[in-house]
Length: 236
Ligand SMILES: [Zn+2]
Ligand SMILES: [Zn+2]
Image 1 (cartoon, protein in one colour):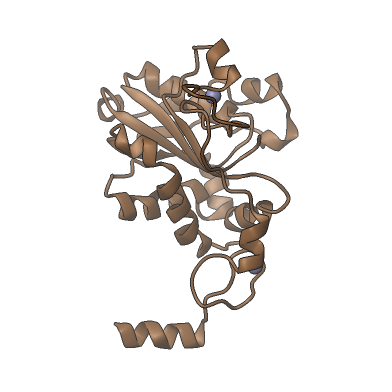
Image 2 (cartoon, rainbow, N blue to C red):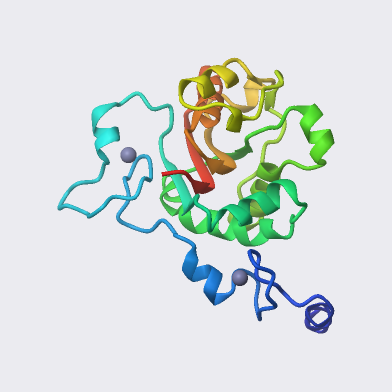
């Protein structure tokens, strides 16, 4: 096996997942690594937004202190979504760079430590409509969930939550129009698999959170115990 790995590395040496430079190990070259903004503590214990500074005893961001009605138990993301992290995410989504899923799932694993500590039953990737799945051939969220499942040993459920109404891409909308675009787009097809479960929704990016929110509401309506979100990147 070792020999095979060496051979494979020789034929297909690991490349930086952002710029393509040949590097010794899986992941990012030093330069790309330094350009990406990882979300590290201090961050809001509920929504995961980075906090400017950790005040003594302050665990929540101003938004979470103000409103209590978020459908999410915890939200966590590994990176800030910006011009530097964009190529990593878009590569996985649109350019068939499915090999990136391995490294990105390790980032998910690390940034989800508070979630794992609080107990989780199942990982659910944000589903694509089947027509989009046929066109793209794979669901990037599902790939991430699959790889993450191998790392953490929690099962993936690809069937119980479906996108049954085709929606326009969220990038075409902003603010409240995004919520409206995904309203009623998701359905739980196997409620018996959802009842009482602590669920983590997996996706590549959290922008306004409208899609994840709609998924969470549908899952909670179906009887889920709690819903967390875990995304590779996040717009702040
Ligand atoms: Zn690089
Ligand atoms: Zn918060």
